[in-house]
Amino acid sequence: MRRIVSGFGKPNRGTRAWAVFALWATTSIALPAQTFTTVHSFAGTDGANPYGGLLQSANGNGYGTTENGGANGSGTVFKITPGGTLSTLHNFCSQSGCTDGAYPLDGLVQAPNGYFYGTTVEGGVNGLGTVFQVTPSALTTLHSFDGTDGETPWAGLAAGTDGNFYGTTVNGGANNGGTVFKITPSGTLTTLYTFCAQALCTDGQHPEAGLLLAANGDFCGTTSAGGANNGGTVFQITTSGMLTTLYSFCAQTGCTDGKLSSAVLIQAANGDYYGTTASGGANGGGTVFQITTGGALTTVYSFCSQSGCADGASPEAALIQANDGNFYGTTTAGGANGGGTIFEITASGTLTTLHSFAGMNAVHQAGLIEGTNGDFYGATWDGGTDDEGTLYLLSTGLAPFVKLQPPSGQVGTAIRILGTALTGTTSVSFNGTAAVFVVASVSEITTTVPVGATSGEVQVTTPSGKLSSNTAFRVLP
Image 1 (cartoon, helix red, strand yellow):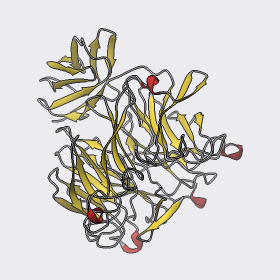
Image 2: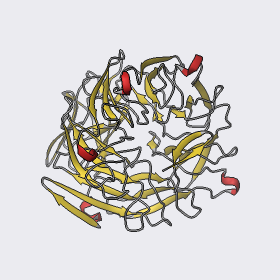
Image 3: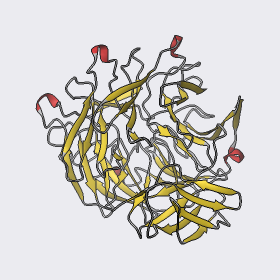
């Protein structure tokens, strides 16, 4: 299901919360040791085809986008409460000429000011996509791409430690191979890098995925094409725009190392990066890969290893590392019913299919998040009551935890701790160093990094017991 935008393919246009989603159930399929629940079916008028995923916000609600649907058929920004009530915050193409943007492909990022930021793949003053800010009451277009500074941003934004946002465009730039850009919260955009700057695009082209803020302060990403073997690349880029190609896919005969990566990378607890490719691998069905910060790549798993691709095929979404240390993700095809899968995979490559979607209920680019209650939340692009897409949860019995925003900072940095049932918290510590805190709500604690804190887990003591952070907090110098 692809159409062409500016000479490059994109999905044909047509979540997740974390507290008490069991109350949202419209469809429930009980499986051994797990429960799959359809939380919301889009109807078109409230949005359609959620290609991006949900964000667990500091206030306990979920926020996301739909690629299509809404009042003008060009997508929406929505909020969904823990009780399951969905409301539309913005209908795109509400302005003449769609100057407010159209067709948001990916999800949102929340800034310290509480506002949300995202991108649209079309619309804006020049029709080539936008960067926007949305509050509970209004949407502001921060930037309209004009081609020279990039066009068609598929991916969402990544927040930098400097308070700015960083992102990619699939096309445009000086060489029409796509760009990496920086944008301030007020809308000043700087192009950091234009792909195809090297002969034969050996530096990569068409970055479909967004960026990962790595532990060293640089950003990492992938391109879906170009590179030394025209199979796409993994790259690292500094905040000043110096790009290093870490790996070029299709380096092995038959592209058994994978090709066409369209998913954001993650940095695992061991410091290595993990990602997926939508094709290539030993069976042509895509891969899960691990790559060191020095560029050494290992194929962890090749999909379509089972008859009829019962283990899934074509993973377009990012992985997550859950608080059990294993990785979780989705495929857009394959599985027992041909509609894609949800899978768990260990670091050593043992894959377990947790759920097979029916028909064309394909999960797309955003994949899963793990809510602070330990459950997983995701979206399907189609399927549901009106075949306009769904939000779902998968419960596998993982323990609750707390999540930190931001995940790193210097002593004195303001930190939000997100969780569930935080009322009555009696202590917060950063790797054993006690911190002063305020319980802002049942789902949020505010604190600052205490003097003497070192990098490691953050622990929160509640009336129900101790909760640990899902990732180690990094104390910056």
